[in-house]
Amino acid sequence: MRLSGPKDIEWIAAELHCHTVHSDGRFTVESLLECAKRYDLSLIALTDHNTAAGVTELSPALESKYVPVIRGIEWTAYYGHMLVLDADRFVDWRDVTKDGMDEKIREVKENGGLVGIAHPFSVGSPICTGCCWEYTVSRWDLVDYIEVWSVGFPSIHRGRNQRAVDMWQSLLDEGYHIAASYGKDWHFEVDEKEPWGCTYIAVNGSDSDLPHKVKDAIRMGRTMVSMGPRPVVVAHAEGMEILPGDTVREGSDVSLSVMIDGDYRSEQWSKYGFVPESAKVIGRFGAVIAKIDLDGFNPAEIVFKAKKGHFRVVFSGYVMDKDCEIAFTSPYYVNSSEEKQ
Figure (cartoon, rainbow, N blue to C red):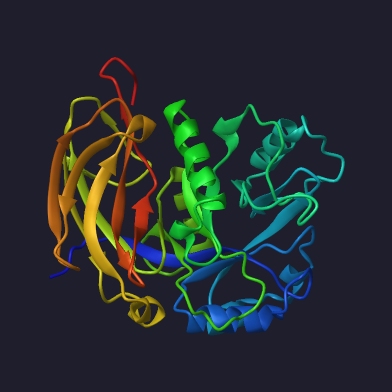
């Protein structure tokens, strides 16, 4: 049995953090796109370190042959790495100070770009100077997404990834609206002996102008993070269907139909022995609002009342015989009845 959401919405697989020979990757631009197509990705972002040189090699013909591309860059500076996607013009990061990132983020946003914090708790100096996020940020309302999962088998890399999830959860609890992403930080093709992952993004309509639609979707918070399989969450509240990033009123009855899609991109993840076991709804401060056991890849129903703040859906189970999280949604938000929607 399959679940489907709104007829004009499709959840596509994307990788938003990729490198080529224009920085420290081994991919050529074309080989990156070709590999992305073989991995059944629908879109990638080209984010070389401190350069957009690879963008000059892109063309409509190349993207049509393989996959569409969001033009981007990974700001690689002393106190952190930041993904900047599809800004209308160059914003110079080279003079940014540890306490000056707010102004740079504001400039990116004023020029139409998306802002994502890359691997915030990766090992830093002296192993990888700048890989750990140390910039002071007060304007978290201007940050679009955080790369909360990265590297292979992300849910068991609890050092860097659990700290990133905890950081994200804390910001959500403070009232910020920030989407989650997975970052493969893709530099070259490897013999993958464990699951990696992808970000699933909800886009409207046909494949036309997909990069623009993905950019809008990320800005609205319409993402899900997974170690491979596509999570499915069909949510209703207040008589309408809602998606991650949407807002409902406190006390609303929320009904969810949930499952892990056992077919989509299965060649990329089924070899790792995914066994879905449960789905739970997580609210403020990590509180479990509701939970249900899953019967493999079959759908299940969850009903609960929305509590002020936010909630997200987390899928767990076994992967390579390890008990771990499989996937999760970005938040749905909940306002009190006195607040404007």
